[in-house]
Image (tube, rainbow, N blue to C red; front, side):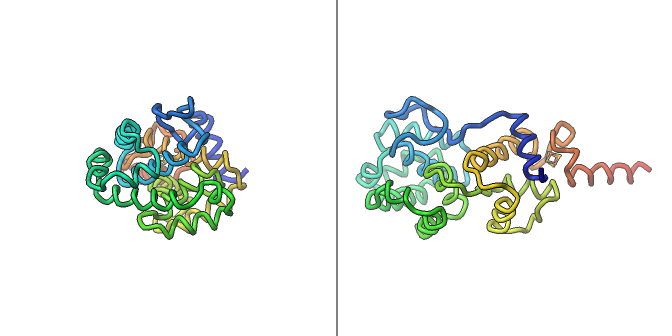
Length: 240
Ligand code: SF4
């Protein structure tokens, strides 16, 4: 088992399955709150969530999703029908609301004219490339949509992934998005469930221990962490 697989096992054993994507309790057509999408509405909610979560916390996104549900806006047609300024007011709690209102309008227009079913038939790369051509969708958002909304295996990279794995000494902190993604694709067997869980577990671990100011002494990965080894070494040198 390589290091990437061992880390996955450790995180999974520690935190348990995360069951992403966290769907809202307001879902009208499905009883579940977490997990794979069961309807087009769920797919749309994941896409909306992936856009809203850009540069903000998930707590803020949850508030916005509740409001969108209350206003019957978890539907591309209804997003298209509402004036942009009104939409911006409703999604205010997600920050950057003017830009995000524009992005939601753009993706709603795209989805209104493109059947979910046709997107589902595309290969992972074709779907990703189509999403990347849409204004306001970068690699992380596109990959979150491909993985969690359309359930196609692609590894999602975010700031937490870069932070943890560069501190562990497994990637370079200057590696770009594609380089980090390729690293995971190379060291992990292509597996939808593992890709979904691994990303969620990375987010969990970053929130629990690997903060900007990390809590290394309590961290379950510390034995194999370069950052922690360097701290210990520096400490030894200063007191020897
Ligand atoms: S030991 Fe510290 S730096 Fe390394 S992964 Fe854990 S919290 Fe992050």
